[in-house]
Length: 278
Image (cartoon, rainbow, N blue to C red):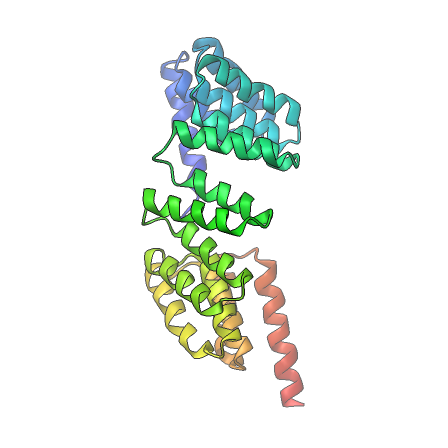
């Protein structure tokens, strides 16, 4: 997908020219500005909240910006302010969970995730992320239960399927892992993480020849996906097919010109072929 953030920024600015008291436009513009101009983003979050003091989404987004800047105490204050306004704010609970996890406060993070789930039972991302936390703590049964809960909520979410694959692999069940990765790719063929995980699993199982078809399906859906071309190139490289590897690494650079990994991979192809030609 093309980055259309500059076009979006222009529309939000136009909206504010027409109506300077549009709190949502201030919030949306702040989201665009946050990456490259956090100071300006803060100004627009402040304006949004001056206009609409109970706009909890702006508080959460401001907190997320502060968390990205490493200002964790200030971020927590924004999330807790959102909860004072609306105690059942699932975004604030979710963000507090992420914050507690960053701080290594895992019991608190778990409870915050559970609070978020209680207030947003239709959101599959929350149990998926709680599953990731459980898995990191070695609570594999709990992790599996959360991934399965996420799939009960949204059977078309490929993330918990991929994570079930990782979990199966951690428990030494490569066949089941490959099945989960494949299911994730049936839903989202160009899902890079699942592609890479399936490639590695099939290689360990001695079934690398099955992988070519998955890459071809991914590129049918997204023929200009540079990350997929790079991964496909690595697959060919690992199979000793250096001409095809070079072709896909070059395509990766065509679609992502500033792609150091693809450059490095092309360098390795040239080194290997130079050795073969010597």
